[in-house]
Length: 43
Image 1 (cartoon, one colour):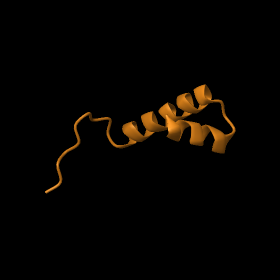
Image 2: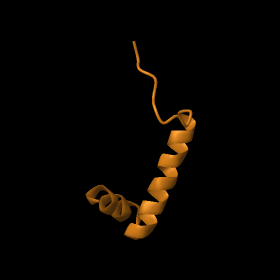
Image 3: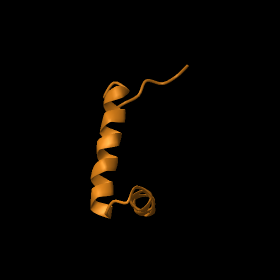
């Protein structure tokens, strides 16, 4: 939660807005990596 408060302060958002925006960013990151729940192990 501390990271979200820091992110909110840096971006001038409320904590609720920061949570929403961060989840959107993470969702895009997840989709860009193939949207797989289990990542393949590297040899």
